[in-house]
Amino acid sequence: MKIISIRSYSKKLALKKPYTIAYNTYSDVELVFTEIELENGITGIGSASPSEDVVGESPAQTLVNLQTEFVQKLVGRDIRHFRQIVYETKKHFHHLPGTQAAIDLALHDAFGKYLGIPVVDFYGRKIKSLPTSVTIGIKPVAETLQDAAEFAQMGFRVLKVKTGLNVSEDIERIAKLHERYQNKFTIRVDANQGYTIEALQQFIAGTRSYGIELIEQPLPVESESALLALPADERSIIAGDESIKDPSAALEFSAPPQPFGIYNIKLMKCGGLLGALEIADIAAHAGIELFWGCNDESILSIAAALHVAYACPNTRYLDLDGSLDLAEDLVTGGFRLEEGHMIIGTQPGLGIHKI
Image: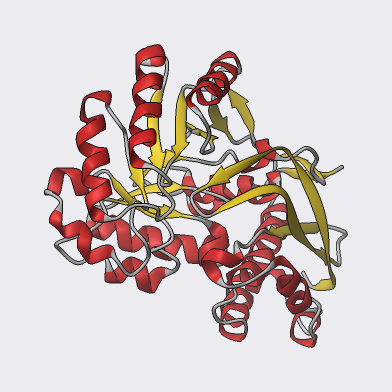
């Protein structure tokens, strides 16, 4: 079944409300979409939302890449050879994971629709549902507690709290959340590279009794060896995020002594589902658990991450709330939320529909 057309476009979408992390504040996001049409009328859709701060690729660059002659020459190829097409795309657009992801997702969606099954079932569904965390940015205690109250009313039971600007204030926010919601929420933390090893040790000591589930990327990239100063039980709850950009990084940090007990996989870092599966396999052999994350993204790419996450037996954590931040989207479907749990339906491909 041949590809007959490929088109790409971008759209800037507002967020419901701005949020702050350790190194930036965001109020909107630019997303890039790719549509791959087959000769039987099936259309597969992919999207990309690369973080330039993390991977060095902007959405504007992604769109330019997707409109090149290389991409247009994919017209006429057989969708049944989608893995070969992804391989060639990764080779051509080396170190450009947003470009890779848009094509990878669109091919997966088209191929799943061609087979008539969800993508997760093509790879083998290992997990039926998990709760996703929802994110509270860096803000004062009162606003943190207000956001938590809103999320509780919406049925969510896992919070990810952004930290990394002031460790004493971070400890206070976690203490107040625990005091008010200790029986309602599991709490995770994401420092976004904002700590030194000394600040991290202070944070761990100051929150030890609050049951923090995991701490995501506390130290800057290239400071991973400093984590070895922590005892093994503390390293086991440290999740590598910006440090785990691709399979090569996953392999590097899998050798003992491991700085991370958890790998955060984002499709926008590793270039799509096939890159994610490579990291997942490395982690599985190293006894490392998986934590699936995202940027501010369309329902489309969140659904794609969910499909591959549920195909991996070492998946333990989800942080796939990126589409919930958007004030609008260009697609619908993909998954449903039930009391904070993310559930994939039985629709073919990635299960999404254009609005």
